[in-house]
Image (cartoon, rainbow, N blue to C red; front, side):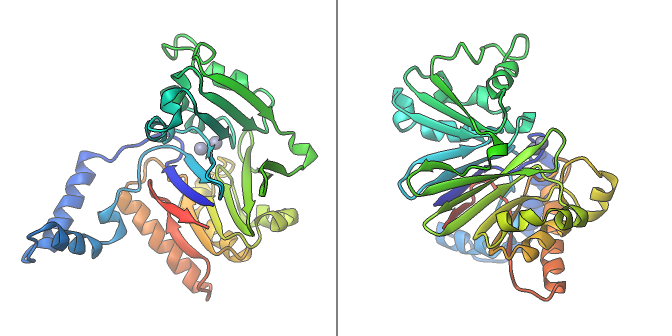
Length: 319
Ligand SMILES: [Zn+2]
Ligand SMILES: [Zn+2]
C-alpha cells in the first residue's frame, strides 16, 4: 500500500500568512549567511540541513488522503480541500478522458471533509464513474446539500459523471473487501455527530486513519474493544488537533491532544504515528513546537516507538 497526504488541516482550510512566510525567509537567510550557495546542488544540500518547518509548510488544505493498493487502485479518504490538487493530478490520467473510476470513502460529513468535492474536476467529466462509500445512510443528501443554490453555482446531481453510493451498516461490523486482498474495517469514534476510523489491511500491513476523534484517558480505558482495532498498526494517522491545555478547554469538541495521541500510539504498539487535523489557528512554528512536545512526551515514557511525524501535505508512506 502507498498512503499519500493531500490535506492535513483540521476544521478550516488555512493558508500560510505573509508574516509567517517572512519569518521563515528571515530564518533561512540567517542560516545561509556566509555559505557558498552557488548552484542547485549546494542549495539543495543546504536546504536539507534546515528543520522540517523551514524546509516545508505543513499545509493549509483540509483532510484528504489516498491509499493506493498493491494492485495500483487508488482509494480516496475524505474530500476536504486537499482533494482539489488531487483532482488536477487525476485529470492527467483516465479521469481527464472520461474513462476514470473514482472511489471515495467518507469518515463523516463535516464541511472540512467534503468541501473540496465541488472543486474536484473529475466530477465534471462525463463518463467518469464515482463510487462513494460511507457508514452514513444519507450520504447522497449531504453531498447534494452542500452544493444547493445559493451555496454553489453548480448542483451535485447536475454534474455529468456517474455516481454510485455504497452504504456500509456499521452495526453489521463486516469487513469490507474493496478488492481481493484489501480489507477495510470501521470503528466509531467519539466526535460530535460521529466519525469513523478506517483500518486498511493488505499483505499483512496495516494502515489506520482515525481523524475527528476525541481520545482521552477515559475513552481509551472504556473502549477495550478499541485495542483489537488499533493494535500493532504499521501506520496510524491520528487526530491530534490540540495541545493538552487546549484540549481541557475544549472537552467534547471531538478532537485529541498530541499528548494523548502519543499515549494512544504507545499503548496500541504503533510503529509510525502521524499527527494530523492541525488546528487552523496554529502556525507552522506552533505545530513544530507541538511536534517537539510529542517527541519529548514519548521519550519521557521511556520508549523509542512509535516513530512520530507531523502530517505534512505531500507526505508519502510505503507499506
Ligand atoms: Zn474535521
Ligand atoms: Zn468533524
